[in-house]
Length: 454
Image (cartoon, rainbow, N blue to C red; front, side):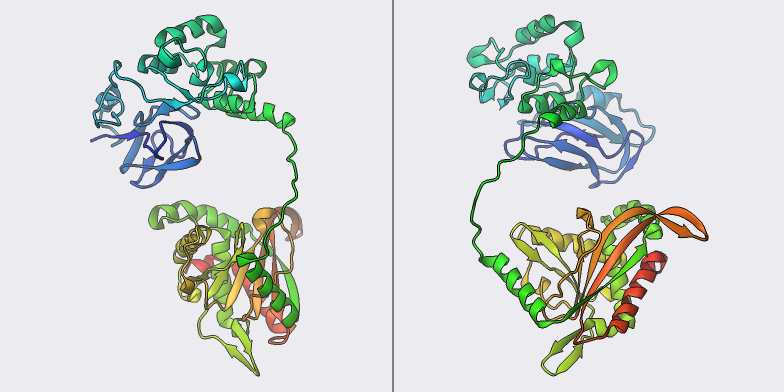
């Protein structure tokens, strides 16, 4: 039996949402719980999961359209079952759970108002706007953004009625009707941009989100820099004390190796959908580097050592820490026994640890016991850097950006995906040769990534 996809309430104050992106297209196979689409609420963009497994038979609400909570936005079913009855029923009533058209005589709950795209006088903008169900439906059918009707309500307390919508349609004429998508109208209102001054790139000159963003960009104001004092306490001071102690105590030497990541990029693109379907995780390049480093440590155990008094102790466990940046400092959650875990396990565990770290929910056991650390600044366009060793360890691996570069292969200049690895090691514990051999093996594993899948 076909399953309705309705717009869920993603927050206690949510009354409507804008479909920003469908992650699946009509005819695509979907699994229950899989991310199906992205919705912009009044607070944030959020993913909506599929309520059932099957085929996405129909997308009812297109991207950049705004609909109320519990509206029908899609249908999932088998490949050949009829869905006309489901489409005719529509969405569900939020209050009573009924399926079908909402009661047109009932009072519509208030929705957040937006500045008018035509007249943006702050003092004239009400903070709450009431819209009758008939007015909302007519506006949706005629391609009129509700934001354009703010301040035009003739009903009690400024309530927008069906008559107001028809009057607005007559005023702007056929050419102006549906000129902008609801999302474009909302952004234009928030930025004080007159939609009539924007040339739309959509069908029939319709103004899309990107058109408004492009119009906003040239007039963007520079931020104002204000003086302030940040207390040198808590996590910031803890991180500072640790890196200062490490830099002053351990003589750091950094080796850099260039890695051809072309095959790793290809392998990741081939397995990412299967991993997400089978394991519920999308492997990142950090996950792949963690796996490669853990494998290489087995052949070069001195990398896994620590200097304690007059002894160099090599740990029997390969516990790889991954540096995670927070607003207040740096935290390093640890993947224990990383050498014994398959790539999907590493990917899922690291994803969970990073999320817990960013929400302050990491347990003490999840940030202690690390024997080696990886820090990735590639997302910030960094091509080379000197990472500082985590206190109590002997080496740290810095991962840089992946970028297309011309490389000579078999006498031919070709474009390859290249990346730098920067290994800092404690020269008291090891010399350059064993450190270089470890880095060389990590490079070889990343350039032949199929070895990491077995």
